[in-house]
Length: 264
Image 1 (cartoon, rainbow, N blue to C red):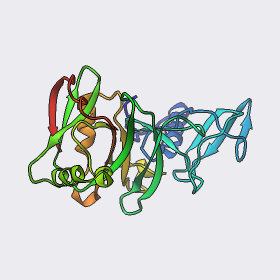
Image 2 (cartoon, rainbow, N blue to C red):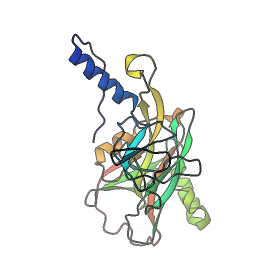
Image 3 (cartoon, rainbow, N blue to C red):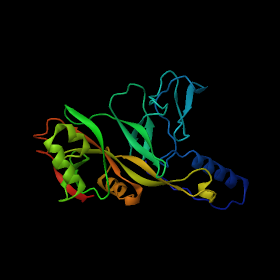
Image 4 (tube, helix red, strand yellow):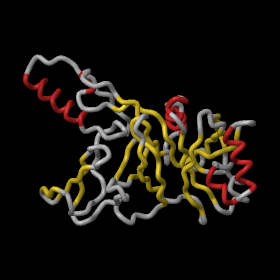
């Protein structure tokens, strides 16, 4: 699902005005990532409103209301906020105890970031792990497309870059491995900058907020991933890359077919 931009127009009859009202209501419920809220997983009964077999809960972090079938519960972090799965710019609540690795990522308005939990199911042959690495712009990471598997991998580093220096240090100590991305890591997600429209923003009452969001890279086409990576500048702060790493790395890159390259 691609983001849809809504813009105000002029109405001359009741039907048009009703349509505009519906559009405005949609705009005011756009979640942190600027997309309409979606029907998600099942959630727990506590704090939910039951309506015709459905229950709804509001995410404290974004104010977005999600709806699901009654009888199950969402995963909440220690601050009582929903845990997410990220797919492109969309966020989906996760059921409690869902399979996957938990990664805390700083997201939100540029000047008011807060940690949120994201859940990633492992995709590589085991053993593997998913981790988040924060790097300043420009990072000096070389990304390559593995077209056959439909994924993006870390192909290497630009000489003298922050990423290269960290990778060299990480190779000397297993304790420091998680502080750097490594060649062969699979890109699962990353932070980028988006403009999020709040209530009334489309009508000029509030300016859109410059917001750090997590882009879920799974099953996304190469141009979409590269386009999202370009969103943001040095003043927005560090980039967090969420990568999956094989713990037995000797043959990790042996059969990958790289058809494109991107230096970031």
